[in-house]
Image: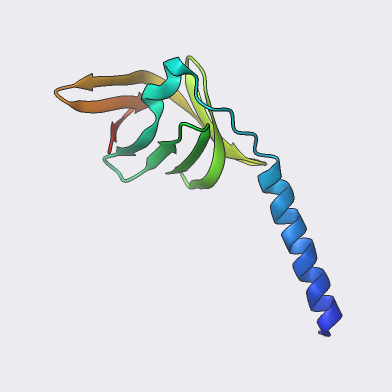
Amino acid sequence: MNTSMKILIMALSLSVALSVTGCTKKIPLAENQKTYAGTWVAADGTFITIYLDGGGDLKMSGTTVTGGAATITDDSITIGMGPIKKTVKLTEKPKQGKGIWTMKLDGNTFTRK
């Protein structure tokens, strides 16, 4: 493969990567959503991280998203970037008990680290 072909392939790859990340619109968390911010981990090691700037990461059920956008509704949380996204049911909103924050997603308990 000649040099100009390699450069063209690299430029196209970069263009695709930038277009996917450029599609991720992050909206900062509203005041009533700030209790969701942090890294939440389940007993099986799956996790979801929600940032105050509206970003999010997750690893669960065979899906991994890094640098996606977090959308929180009354009954679900979605973390996604472009066509890759995962929505989980918000079974129980974040609450604090004995100094430990927990919430339930899809019926599983997650603890904030």
